Image (cartoon, rainbow, N blue to C red; front, side, top):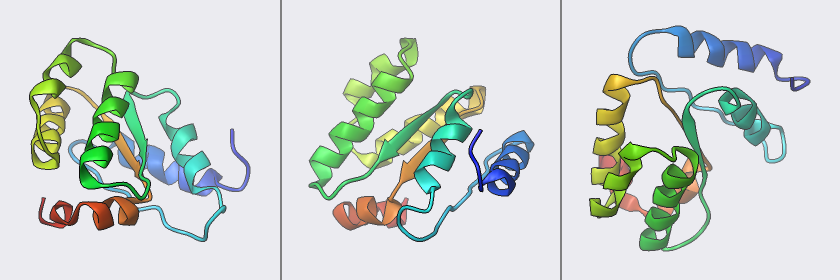
Length: 122
């Protein structure tokens, strides 16, 4: 259990318990525990955590795809090799989420969006 983020963790728990798609935006000062909160929330759930870095779009995509392969090592990830861009990746995630509860945590989304401007349109 993390200290000082119990309220936020409880709110994520309530969102997760609701049916359908849910979006939570977690913001705050650097080094305030946002990443730890995400990792704690994901600990006992099926999901993927991706930490964006200032890389080119192709490298961001390759690392994002690898995060899925590493964190969801099952039959479904074999299709990721046929996906060539973020639009296809998010479509794949949407299809997967229709059949199972899935958490996708993108840490530092603004950095990812800066490298991949087309993300705003998805």
